[in-house]
Length: 520
Image (cartoon, rainbow, N blue to C red; front, side, top):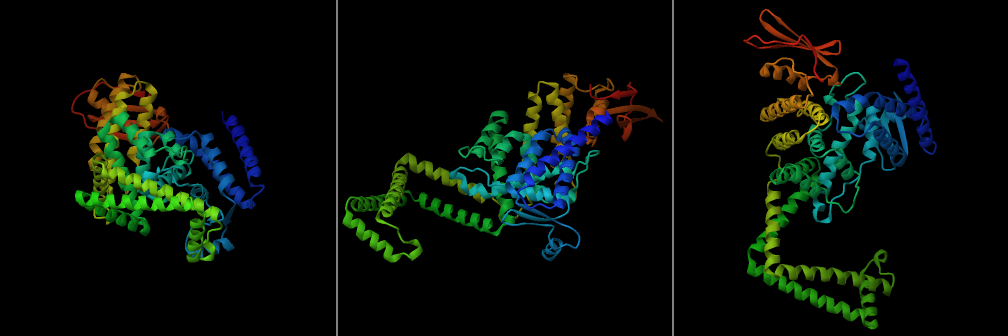
């Protein structure tokens, strides 16, 4: 087995080397850079089986590596590895940064696989697809999804080294985005998120698709609450980091509040829209006269050009005709909107729409008055309720095994700089306990886990330790039980290596199996 593994490693080494040679032959990559990229790929190769086993909801290893090759080929023109005391190293020192990503797709980075991979991922990020009517959300949603996705992909070499799973807190730059992204990942699945990130369809409204998915699988109330909270968090977080986003949302709120105030005076509003309609009608008539009269067109051409700087002058009368037709189309569109708002149904619809938007914007926390952690915990709570429904619907052993791994992983996610794990958060403890109980109950019905004892309460306590274990492959978990001095001890082994010993409180005699492999 060991010999076969060595042959496979040599094959991968040669394969990666050949692929990189083809990609880099037209690029300015040094031998040091190539070696660092190879080292990065080997770390992914070594860590991916454990990453995939632990996390479940991931791309296959081949898909992941192929995607990385594509990123290097399409988005990286040059990568400069900053060796000790080199010119590149001095540039980074002067700016007090670990890497620089330049506009010409050039990367300067410290000789570190994780940092270089982060730069490649950043260069490959794109603005996510948001429909025209929700364009205001584009920056916030893009920032959240791209940041979360980047940390999600870096995890394979950040937390997995081929032997163990160790969450490196200092290497997770944005804990909030990470929690939100992982929550979304386990709610809707990796395939949905990949399509959204890759702009799989420019016509798709993924916010509505997200809401529709949650509604279909977990109910309308949860769909409304989750999507609303997700969007609010995206806006709050981006506004706290970017001044222009903060100003944008403040101004947007003022604009919509002003429009709502106008709508509330119905008589005055309808009078104003009637005046606007007349104005647009008159402007359309004037354009039509010009389009049907060459002399009027020539005069308009001269009039406009006399006021425009040289760089903006209209090239010819035919270009003016095109411009006038575009202006006419825009006026027709505005007149159509006026007609809609003048009608009772259109007025009521518009008023309700603006009321909802104002309510949403006023619920934002742009001033950061409330600890954002509370909103994130609320989002996790909604996910916890949805996860219970997933468990209830599960019908196969593999589904339950996957959910055991997912719940374990989710519970280990770190919420704050104090290294608080999600499963330790007071508001979420009950949800985690209920999910564990439901999973163990379903696992027993589907013969997924071995019963260590007929005592249901003790059996549940023993099996609960699965969710606190950082053993990569839970299928390797073996337990030994013993009673010493009237106390019940459970030893948990990763095959033959002792991982943990737990003492259970028990005031009664129970019959135990001495040595048990937990997964059937």
